[in-house]
Image (cartoon, rainbow, N blue to C red; front, side):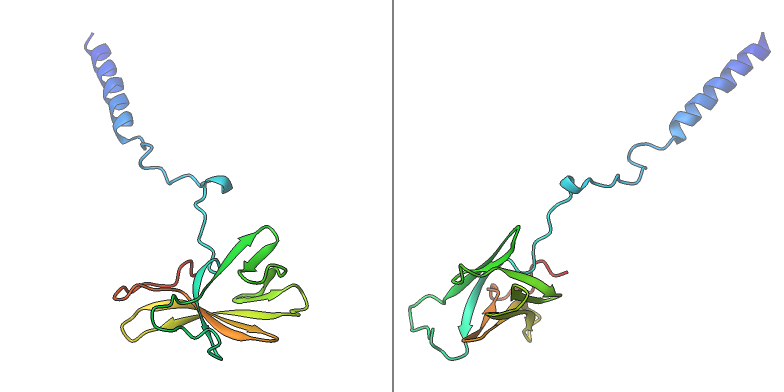
Length: 150
């Protein structure tokens, strides 16, 4: 009878040990998310920008609001506010142009760095008949990286 108790105790101890040391769901590596579950990354082009015109045609007088332009994206490509008939595509990393021929021109992605460590996404718009800068609005006194930097 002592052998049977010892055998049952051994089995019970083994079962308890197996349960205690078995990997829990917390110990398993996280499962990979399906494409539809992945959080969407912020597009580095899309946003609202302040406009600075090289030729000061859009000179801002005291009390006036700084002109802004928006870039949006849909299934066809990017759209720059004020140019409804043009769709821009990224032809190289950091370069948008309207279609394959760039008949209107290109938009170049850049970054402005300030002495206090702040950075802002900056776009150079270089079209056949006008050029200007678009820059990401930043809050004074806050250091951050450009949105959606890849």
